[in-house]
Each structure stands twice: as C-alpha cells, then as structure tokens.
Amino acid sequence: MRILLVEDSMSLCDVLKTVLQKEKYEVQIANDGESGLNYALADIYDLIILDVMMPKKNGFDVLTELRKQRITTPIIMLTALTQEYNKVKGLDLGADDYLPKPFSTAELLARIRALLRRKTDATPDNIITFGNVSLNLSTFQLYNQSQQKSVKLSQKEFDIIRYFFERPRHVAEKESLINKVWGLENDFESNSLEVFISFLRKKLNYIDADFAISSVRGVGYQLMPKNQD
Image (cartoon, rainbow, N blue to C red; front, side):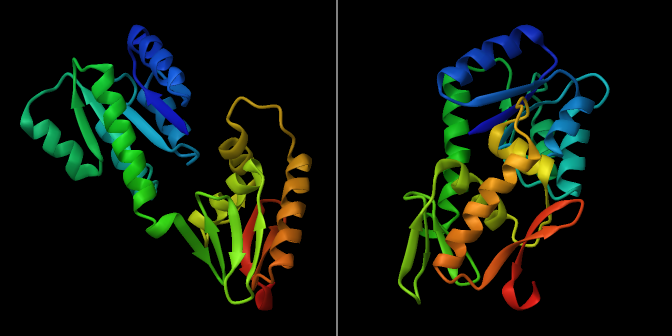
C-alpha cells in the first residue's frame, strides 16, 4: 500500500514515515501543498494524509482541487485547527476523515486501516469485474465464469490489471502505470512494461476475455472491447 504524506513539519514527517514504514506502507513525502497536489494528481496512492496549514497551497485548496479532478483516493486531514467548523469544512470538501493535532500514532494507524478496509469492503466479495472477466483481489486470479477458465497472476501482473479494472474507461499513461506499480523512485523502463502487458494479453486470451489491453499510440494503454479494438 502506498501513502502520500503532505505535511510541512519535517520532524513530524520523519516520525510518521518511520511509523508507517514499520507497518509496511510505502511513503512519499511532500512538504508543501503545491508539491503535494502534483504528487496526488498522479493518482497512484492508496491513501493521502493531508495537513491543512501549509506553504504555497493550504490543505483545503489541495483537497478541493483533487476532488474537482475526480481523484477519489481516501484522504485523512491533519490540523491544529480544532474548531468544529474546520472539521465540517474538510469533510464537506470531500475528506474521508479528520484528525486534530496532537494525535497518537496508534490512532492514526487505526484510521488508516479503517479507510483502507472500507475501500476494499466496497468491492463485494473482493471481486472486480470488467466485461466477462472477474479479478479476485484475494487469490490474484482472473477468471471467466461462463467459460469456466481461470489463470493465476504474478504480483505485478495483478497490480497492473487491477489498475485497469479500477479505471475501466481511463487511458493509462505509461509513466503513471509504472509509478503506480513500481513506485515513483524507480528505474523501470517503459519497454519493460510492454513485457508485462504482453503476459497479461496472453492470459486474457487464454480465458477468452471479450476485451483486450489496447495500445494508445504515444500515450499508453486502455481496456477495449474486442469488437472495437
């Protein structure tokens, strides 16, 4: 799971990064609202922890822009502004949770787990479906129920196809897809991504999927029905 921490306090960032990494989360830090917004717009994070009072752009403005751009990533707001109307404002703008400072790391971790669990539970039986194919989030299997065919995916294949299934009409840019699956700090090359796409195409063909991963010239990939490919 990948978390974006947008917080201008260097000392708090250091503490939270250590705590989150101990819980096996990958953490990206931004120390001002402007850079935090730029990171978040990549839409590669599973959760965002967002401070309110920050230089360049405050958390409310960042939150507003993210929801305007249809970034639905769960967001926990952190702030020393404890007045009720600030909490109400954050929630009304689209925050999923609001944690006033000071807070315990145990409570923050509990809220993170709750939001990530809610995100998973929103998918009935941990299944995502596109066309005639379903992806089991627990077993890493793609299957076509009508044809009684299934195939097991590797971790990276699973991460890639899940990205597509969660954004069925989205044209996935190669860079965004690589960042989502391998992280921002990677030396993975786009031509290597094609190898994984090729593996997935073969597996989709094997289970008789009624769609394919189509190349969008100069951009990336998109799921398309075979009769429109």
